Length: 197
Image (tube, rainbow, N blue to C red; front, top):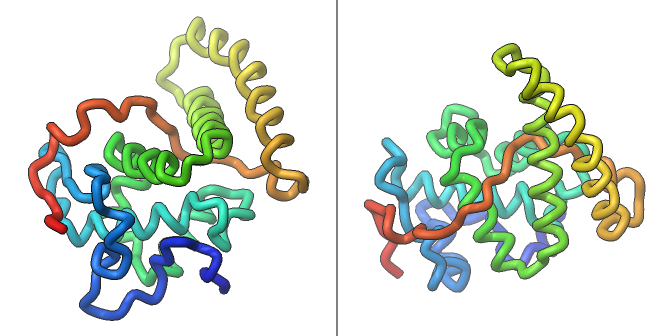
């Protein structure tokens, strides 16, 4: 698999080294990449290193996994390419689509400065999360009807962005599996551990 197109290649980092040692420019001045929130239990700086490495492979448009349609499969591929297992602590943040995971994800998008791709990725993830909620049992009928009415417009917006971003049908049908949250404010104030560079 070719990872050479990635500006920050998280694969093949020598044993005993961390991503911030190999690519320090990725971490400087980016609080989300250097800090662990107080409310995130049993999460070390090593876990943060693994989460950031995963995010690069999972969402970078130049990742060899970017063409993968199924986001769950894409996530597994990225995790396995890094040699990580589903028992890793960072993986809980990913599978639960926590605020912490989403803040890391969107900090990486901001760094890429690709607003169109970020918007598409967010909408696609939100669309899938909405569909997932519709399939659940806990929603009131009135809420279900409201979401069903809104989801058509939501899907149309996603499709329009896909046509702008992806010229081929294969890539245009990527399905997001996680929800994206908007808020990135007040990030640094919430942290207990900090990576010193």
